Image (cartoon, rainbow, N blue to C red; front, side, top):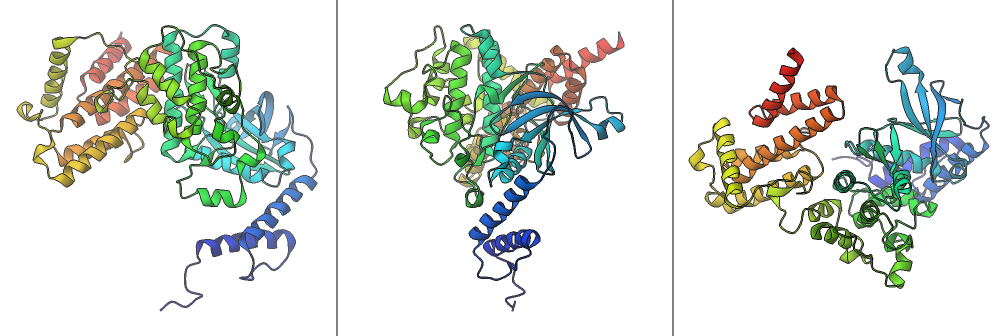
Length: 497
């Protein structure tokens, strides 16, 4: 039987001991007493940390400064609510003769350094951003401090923030398809974050970057908080409430955010819908009035001319003032952009890759593709169209759940990666249970189609190296996808000419 000293520490006890060590290190006080209140100890630790930051003496960080004897700040790129972003030369990369030695460094502003929660705020920004590995979310490398200067390092982006693009075009707009592509990429970034139980909480054009290769990157999860049903929400609320810093943008914040409600993915959807409206209409849906004002004035957004019904429905739904009436998350927003008939067999919005097929011809083409795919993968064609009627109730439920999982993975761009948590893996699990499942077979075919189009986009953008890399990975998983094989043959022929 375990004694008291042998038992693992509880969560509260572990927290108390960790805080105690911090305070002991800074004050020399004895904090090991079990009577110590963890919340009070955490407050004292934060206060001690803030005092240390405030009292430390160092030069003001500016262009020309060097952090940690490594990062040389060469150019100021922008200033935000939490700090200043610089283009920096990483001396370690220079020593390694890296051809791309530049990164971005975000330095916490002096105003936030005076706040006891500031160090924790940026540390959590870095930690949460590092969790979000997605092509439409900026890559964060590390979090560190140099004396009183707290900073984080991230990938350097070339292009322009979306707010500058919108301002430059106003009252005009981007070409329709280009605007829709931006909306899709923004939606995928938020859908992925929501799937990880993270809410951005300050989604606006200034936190969206359009790279020179027309790739959207969502930045600044500085006040991102765990969604209220996450296991981490209690831990976060104990020592830090980002909302107390006032770091939100009224023009793009939902009513609930402005009224200090708990964070929810639907808050991000409101911001996403506002930005989407601006891209398509060239103006703010409520003349830049905060949501609470617009709600009290009973304002309604005018429908942009010639906007397809399904797209208008998705945006209008996302602009609902009441959270209960708003789109539940970015995954659903993206799904609604495809129209009411979109489902498992149409996870990618129809407006991304227009298809001009009709009636019987569509059916013939689809069936032909299914039969060809079946033949190439060793599946008996006569059994391809079997449904799940032969499975027991439990297996049917499992297949249905996996199909839903695969759909979400496709919506957020998880086609083949990460291993064990992708649409490909979900479809493969279905085929183990039900060898000839029609939706899984079609799903794998669609994955190949999506990746083929993605590779072609890389090639059109001039990034042949990344395109070939993606093509090679895809063929490892889908070695008989005809579109990918044809593309490989075309590239091989060009290389041999």
